[in-house]
Structures are given as C-alpha cells and as structure tokens.
Amino acid sequence: MYLDQDGKRWFRGNLHTHSTVSDGLKTPDEVIRIYRNEGYDFLAFTDHWKPSGSGEKDGLLLIPGCEYDAGGNAADGIYHIVAIGPDHLVLPKPGPENTAQGILDAIHEAGGFAILAHPAWSLNLPSEIVKLRGINASEIFNSVSNNPWNGRRGESSVILDMVATLGMPLPLVASDDSHFYTGEQCTNFIWLQADELTEAAVMDALFAGRFYVGSEMCIRDRFYASQGPKMDVRWDGKTVKVRCTPAQQVIFYSNVVYTSPRVSKGFGLTETEYTPLDWETFIRVEVIDANGKMAWSSPIDLWK
Image: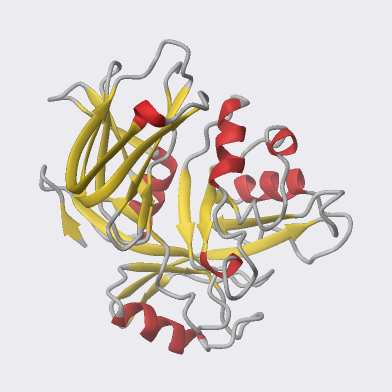
C-alpha cells in the first residue's frame, strides 16, 4: 500500500492466479504465503472452472474469482475470461456449447467483473473483440504468456490499441497468471485506489474505473497496471498530465500512429504532459523506468 500526493490509499493486487485446485503447481496456502511475503494486499484465485471464495488469510485479502474459456482454436476464436467477484457459480462446466458472449453474460448475471485474459497469447482479433458485450477490462500484460513460459505474447498493447481505435477503449490490468512459480509470480499487478481494504471496496473501485477530482476538475484512474512504477494520470479535458516515480520514458499512445511528439525522455523523469490533437480519440499512458519496468494507464476516451 502507498499514499499518493492527495493522501489516497493505493493497494497492490493480482487478479489472475492458479493453484493445485486446477493446473497450478503450488497449493493455495503456498500461494498466499508467496504473495503476502512480497507485500501484496489482495489476491484472487482464478483456477480454471473452479470458483474461489472470499475472506482474509495471513493478512492477505482474498477476492472471489474463476477463469472460464470458450473456443478450441485461434481460427474460431479462443477466449479466456476471468470472473472477479461473482456471488455464485457462473457456469457449471466447460464444453463446446459455451461461447465468449455467453460467459460474459453469465458473469454479469452473477454480479462479477469480467476481464479478457491474455488477448495476444490467445490471438484474439480486434475486429472480434469489439463485437463482445460486457468486457469490463483486459489484461495488457500477462506474465506467464511471456518468456520463458509461453514465448513472447505477454504484452497485448498493440491489440488493445487497435480495439480502442475501433471505438472500445478498455480499462487495463496486468496479471501474473501464475502456474509454475518459477519466476512469473509477483511481477505484474494492479495498483487500486480504495479508502479501505475490503472486498466491497475493491469491487467498487474496479467497477468505477475512474474518479473525479473536483479541486482540479479532472479525472483519474481508480486502478492501473504496473510492474513496479507508480503513476498519477489526470485528464482535465484539455491536457493529459502525468506524475510518476522516476522514469526514463513516458509515452502517450493514441489512434494516431506517429508517436515521436508524444514521447517524453529523461533520466529520473517524474512529470510530463501532453495536449491531444483534435483527431485523437483516446490516449493511453505508458511509463518505463531505468530497469525497463513498466506501468500502463487505461486509455482515456477523449470523445466521451
């Protein structure tokens, strides 16, 4: 947990985790110890088709979760969807009758928050993603989808920028998707702003996505994806302003492909800003520190 410049509390959590309940190689108790010892505040067990419960153990808040999937090959569409916080079993069992839209609908009927998992690893097409209704967020980085576990499809930023360009700027999270516990764990997570560390407060922040800062007449994210860097991104209707822990680059991505004017560089860079062009429809901020660790904001819908 950290306090920002406004005295608001930010909690660290992982929303995609596996254990021996499905195909993970560590027991739930072992996983809890690993994340607690790394300073995490909350964790969701999302074992495949095995919903987890809520509670608190050894100082770690546990959020209900489960990972569902539909489709058998990339040509037809493979979708892995993480349900966070459902109040009952979403679907009884895997099978060819399940569809991505059906899973999303069931998650929402159960009061859950639906995250599209590792779209790059799944080869999800932007033109197909935008047809789905009810995606609350997407993973922009998934640890276990990257080297050395699954090649180099851990980062989904290009796919998700295409999705935003097509008119669906999705909130973004980063997750470990831990299975093996050989280095992928405790590397990608979210920082989430809440006044207290409870399941209700975490779920409220996820569904809210952003909050309004009346004193500055701007909006901020309620959560953002990170590998370590901290950032504060504010949009006042004219300018995107960024404050962050020391970085070497801050990049403003949008639907406009030429990026040079939108890249701020410097050693120990902690502040920068960007005024979008009239024809830019979204802005997504990426912070990169001296060690190559990254943080990602959710895209700001400039036309909303």
